[in-house]
Image (tube, rainbow, N blue to C red; front, side, top):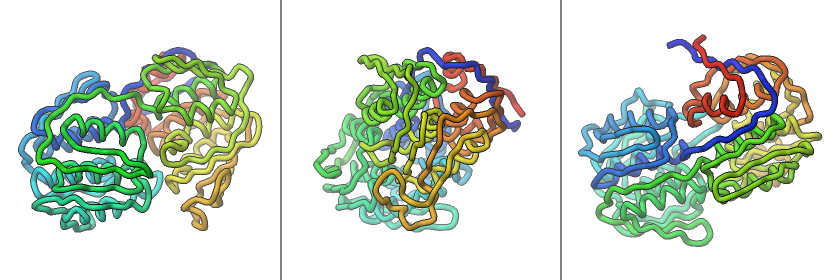
Length: 435
């Protein structure tokens, strides 16, 4: 298959309206949760992203029915025809490991290939495996994937070593139909976790949120199908707000509730952004220019790690020295060389800058960056290494002097809803072609 390219000729400030749909990180998890129901589930406001197709392929492989139309995904649970996820799905995303719990409930056994996703740092399967073993499953890790077996999962107490989103989802998906009560301590509380829990509750699950990152689940015998409409993607919304700011324009983002962007909005406001916020949309502009900032990523409700890639480009257009401290993934700054090749003045360090010492303190992980602005970026030939870095490359190309060629665009299409249409609507001349 020929490689797809985007060719971008910067044209000045980006202005206009963008409507975001549900997050790719939410729709795929809801599709997996729907496996647990006794009837069809409908997921509305679904984005048109590659992740949906990949997840649908996995569900269909094990015997589930999946129907897709514009903005809607229907999952029809059927008898499991094969409890093994095909090895062809190895490394495509992180969804297979989340299917272990539902497959154990429906078939008593499961095999999933090794997880993949973006190369932004280790996503250890230990948290997931330890949790499933705590439920009573026999779990074996092999070179090609994970085998699991259980006649019945039994509720348990689980304390996660780190509030991992994926591990919290694994526990929720196992706990809702396990016998007895499950208590999750140090659980992740990201909006996508809450959204998944609410969907499971609509299906009949008994889930309570307690103080101090505790989630309590009382297992039930059966779940029914349910309907839901996903809330707008907070990562995509932030990315497009920054697209306006970084080019000196203004973008009005529809479809993402303000409460999903509280920390992001305040961070941008400290940098000089001015906001108009209604119940329907959020718009940002910076008529007086941008100031530098020191930002540390963290688990929710902190500044999300997925927000830092567009923020890094914004730092290059802020007048002064900015600092970014990444505490969630140790290899998240792997995209920085691409920005440096376009003229960005960024230095990365293995020390904790811009915040207290994090879990990567005293490691060799390059997880802090110092950025000098305002910098004139120049067009370049850049390969996108992952979804979020891909968006940052588009932003850099939009503000650069001269044309850019972006490769690896399948990454951004896996995670953003129709990005070519969205960018063109904002006035960015973007030509998609095959190499």
